[in-house]
Image: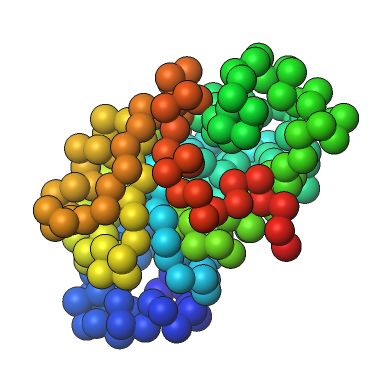
Length: 235
């Protein structure tokens, strides 16, 4: 399988014979093909040890390659990009979604929505303390925030190319997450259309515009999860 070790909270999911059959079938179909992220990161979410409180759902991994570091842009987490590993928020962020996620957190803390350059200046000066990108994603996960793509692989340069392939696994995974009493953060029409059919009518769902849209900054769902330290300052 893609990954042979996992945190204990995933035991019931992975010990199910149907889950094993589905993952084996997916891996067999991917065998000998090129896809992102790296094989060992496809099921990265299984290493999450904290209780899952929120699931931030992205559609599929970024289908591009990080030439600087020689790895795919996709990291196995939704919205995280490999170029930011070890970098600060002042580095070039190509993805508008991630830029607006940063701005949304700033907006919630300050009540203002300045240009990104101002936010970066505030971070650099220490006026707006926030964990650097790598630490930020790690600390969100430690608090129970799961960044999950609904489709876990993609062919290089072909967005959505493996959507159908992962459908049987979604049908097992999303109900399992709902049974954990997780709240789903669904950003944009695609997530809001694709995910609910796998959930019950009683599932806890928060919606917002897709973070690539400017409206996300002031209509984000972070404010609805007040128990999470969205600055990521606590280690």
